[in-house]
Amino acid sequence: DIQMTQSPASLSASLGETVTIECRASEDIYNGLAWYQQKPGKSPQLLIYNANSLHTGVPSRFSGSGSGTQYSLKINSLQSEDVASYFCQQYYDYPYTFGAGTKLELK
Amino acid sequence: QVQLKESGPGLVQPSETLSLTCTVSGFSLTSYSVSWVRQPSGKGPEWMGRMWYDGDTAYNSALKSRLSISRDTSKNQVFLKMNSLQTDDTGTYYCTRDWGYFDYWGQGVMVTVSS
Image 1 (cartoon, rainbow over the protein chains, first blue to last red):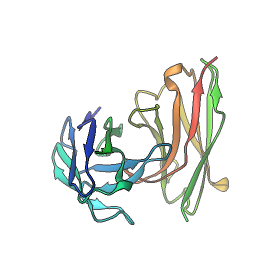
Image 2 (cartoon, rainbow over the protein chains, first blue to last red):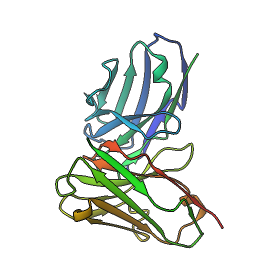
Image 3 (tube, rainbow over the protein chains, first blue to last red):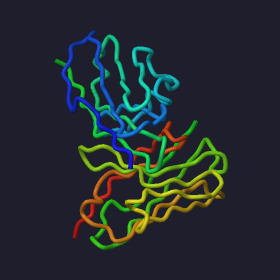
Image 4 (cartoon, rainbow over the protein chains, first blue to last red):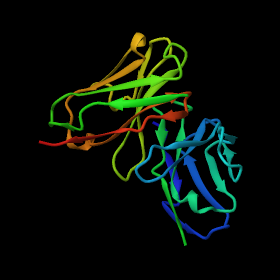
């Protein structure tokens, strides 16, 4: 199975700040990577797919980048509604696997 | 609009079988694939398996011996059955529309395995 290692596990940032979350795959996943946002008590919501494509309706302050085994999610100008947990997921190979998550809080 | 909704029991006895139903609307099961994803409280999600649009299935090898996914296209429903449940199967179970990535998720159903 492809292991997804996400960092950091938790993150505290101020409003307006730029935040970056990293995800490393145990092998090349050829941009088969998605990012999700999950607020407490809610289902995960798709933010980014194919490593860098913004899902419909997602604010442009969210962006994804990377290739090979290294990927990142960047949030520009952090807003209060961005407080959530974030997960990466690879879909290059079965079984699809997720990272353990990054919990983003306001400083 | 696209919607998925899970239904099933919230409490299952250890060693028993879990049966869940995903009812979809706004898209056809013969055009889109649907996956089941579960998430223990406070942890990352785990992909369980997929019902392809053509009726084929794919399973997480870690669960394959216990898991079965089927569908009834006339009722727009996808079913999950998993046997020999243990306490570490406790969590929230979601059905999702599946492109490899998951663009729509149901609200989830919380399943507790306990006697």
